Image (cartoon, rainbow over the protein chains, first blue to last red):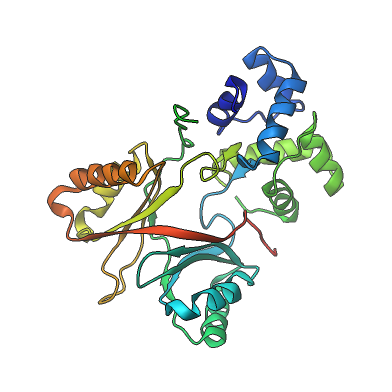
Length: 152
Length: 159
């Protein structure tokens, strides 16, 4: 069960997490609780996998070169191909989706040549083509995601 | 801004998540053999330069009940995609909004917007909302729901 402190930590600190020597103390001061309260609540959220992590968000292509990739894989082969793709350390998100193009993932490489080499290797290893969908423009203003806790 | 190895070390160390200890930046500094001051100064600089977009608590939407994540894809004329993309990117339920290339004939879509909802109906309403924003410029669309998360990790760089 989420307490008001849990909800506040989930919603109100998705940006502007303090860059100070005692950030959890700073959050505690803002919320009128103790540093221990904040650390315990975050530990509970983390242990229950309700937060992925606390840390910096980096926009695409700030570090290295990345692309979204889609593949159309026959249903019977999907799991085997997906496992091969996930095994690449350069693969960051790998999702199965309902579509002819049913395997979607992001590849991050140090440079364009490295990226192409990885995609070539994937095609050779799996026998299926990769469709590259690199980012041309980012329209997103990232302010975090407002959680609706009405039914939580 | 050119990142050096120290910046990249800091990014790698913090991408796994800041530790839940009273002085997390000191912890990162010790791990890297740096001072806390250097770690914090560099992170502030990277944030000012937009290398870091934000620092924060990153909720796990799926575990919090947002079980429906739909990748909506739209075919928008090239001459209006910038204007309309910005409008869609501002909708509060859209978590990512990107212009990507078409691959004709099998992939006519050039605008991608991710939406998240607790029910399929929520997501359907969000999609209708986007369609209203796009109006006549919407030459075709599709929604790809994720059926399985196969791998999800934070940033990693081999330097």
